Image (cartoon, rainbow, N blue to C red; front, side):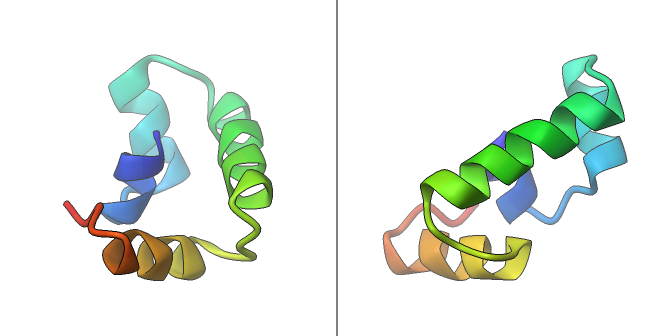
Length: 55
């Protein structure tokens, strides 16, 4: 799921691709951000590029 966020997919797009509800995606994305101690999708993308996880 984090890779889809890094690729720029919206919550709705992620939900459709993974057959989940948008709310489930919102919760998981929030937990990913918290666990990695970043405040936004942009910060997550920057972090991913820094450690070489860019898509």
